[in-house]
Image (tube, rainbow, N blue to C red):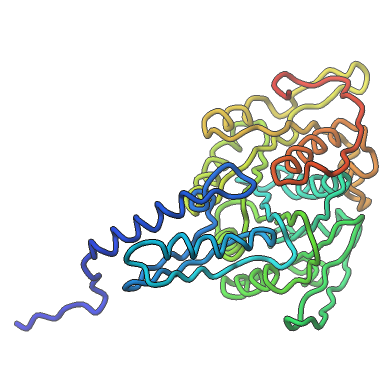
Length: 367
């Protein structure tokens, strides 16, 4: 009988190509990022690496202040004896210095609330902040910022048509929720969702921002992968709650980000405890220890434990972030500390920081 070879048969591995790829990665690992204490490869800034004959092609995902890395990468790789030329395609969001994702393993842990309040705390510290609400399952950030059913405008720029973000309390906002009619679900299939999220990443006129926070959908799905692949995210902030039911989901999310080369910078434990209105003692309503366990097991720093406070819900319904309305509240102080840490890490330490009163009481492990 005749023998038919499959057209999908995988070609045999090329030992020379594998050796050259290892050499390229080794050279790139010698280049340190300007802000985070790690190299470009480990930070996920180098993607789509390909070697064709004596040429190297890759994408370099950086902030707008890191454009000089393109020339450094190309010079470093061209120094290889066999490399005729290296092409590093620069992928960045114009005007944005630092892009961070806010994620959670499961829904209902207060991820969007954390993103809004962190954006408010960063704004109060003097930073220019944008917030991209990419949560296609629950895009409620516009309501939390008092924008409701505001419409999105499209403007003409030198680079073509761009979405114009809305402004609320000094925070620039773009949300998938602004594209949907009230009470109508965002029932998007994969290709439509991919196209819209990519447009929001590439076609928004943000202006000059120190931070762009991206509020991701919960879990590990197509939307998260699209955003990870198409944006220069340099790190993720994970949000969880103390109970054990949230621990396994956070583990999966952390594993996903590490697989795609995006570092998890820190963990925020939301709903950690309730401060008694009379005595000020903390009560762990939803249990305790979940955040500390994840931080210990996965070697992720626990940045803050956010207490329950009825005012955070009331002000979110009113469209006013708590750190802007009540900066002395315990919740506001936690987010102010996280904002100060981010400013120090990403080169914004010179910004004026608010003077906040010391908390009345805090549970063990928060300092």
